[in-house]
Length: 204
Image: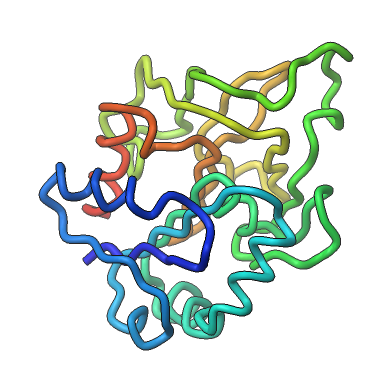
């Protein structure tokens, strides 16, 4: 069962519709009790880093989520801001993230990019996986995904970068440490590429 964490951010319906088309059981979870039997967890998110963490903390699911992911090793994928809050901190805010994949979320202005680089980074872009397994099985060539963001994940350990893309410079657009995955792009808006990635997640 895919449990989609509904803490007030992210298009939960889009993920439910995608998994329905894939014939994969999925449900939204809004309480710690509902999360307790999760065997796969999707952590969506849009907006600002601090706001996402505040809502997650207020949801009452934070402690159960930490236990499921860090102790029980349930596979989880964070998406967009849901990926960014996997980090320790963000240049966008002052609060602490989940710290599941050590790193800092930085603004694109931190990169050695031209001053006129349009922000946010919006639209379709190529994605180059580090390996052809896990989330990216079958997506090792010509994979393109839809992006909408102004911040990128700077992993503390380069080995935690699961895929890269280029916008002004190369950046990690996906991260992975053990059972924890994160993607900056929106698979729920990325047609057959996104459908394949979400199916792969359900089969991890």
